[in-house]
Length: 243
Image 1 (cartoon, helix red, strand yellow):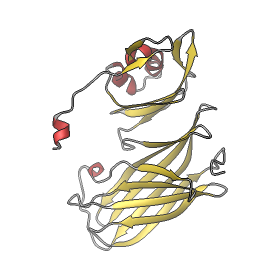
Image 2 (tube, rainbow, N blue to C red; image 1 turned 90 degrees about the horizontal axis):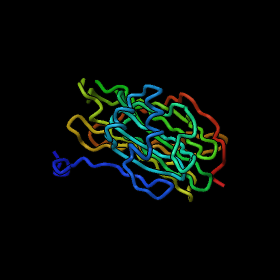
Image 3 (cartoon, rainbow, N blue to C red; image 1 turned 180 degrees about the vertical axis):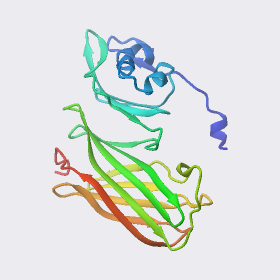
Image 4 (cartoon, rainbow, N blue to C red; image 1 turned 90 degrees about the vertical axis):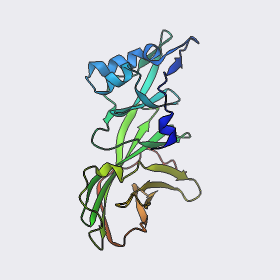
């Protein structure tokens, strides 16, 4: 166990209100919390108990992650109070994967790109990993799927044994954007049976749609026989942020 884990201390999140007051999050953001109580989302208990793993803010959009999932929700200002912009359910469950999403802010076009992965299969000589990319439009207050693909890695031997907790082998993804090469870079670690390091990298480019340009793997613990990609859906982006 990491020494950092030994020193973890639970804290409390405080937020400044439009009037300048600094209050606990469950008070200042109570309208948003109550919204998720109304739609009976499992994240409500986490919010109420301040069991928050990550908190971020983009303009007037708030991101909150707990053990059970995460939300991107737009805030409106009404009579000096913070309220949700609508009653849409923005909760994404992480109980069956999709742990710890990564996100990148396109400040020019006010869009947030979100990526998360899920290990669907790991056994024998096959690993299947699903990667999903969403786009939150800050101006339109919409959250839409943009690209979902499944990577099937076939190894030359039965390297992976059947595992009881396959999620230990796949780490959350990281997404970055390069203005020079005009592409997204999605990378994540897939460990070997003895937790050896392995890296999988996908380059995404946009022509008429967002699509896979190349896949690169560094898997020193075993030889890859083949890589198969299945794209589940592929939607046009609503703005050309590459201009």
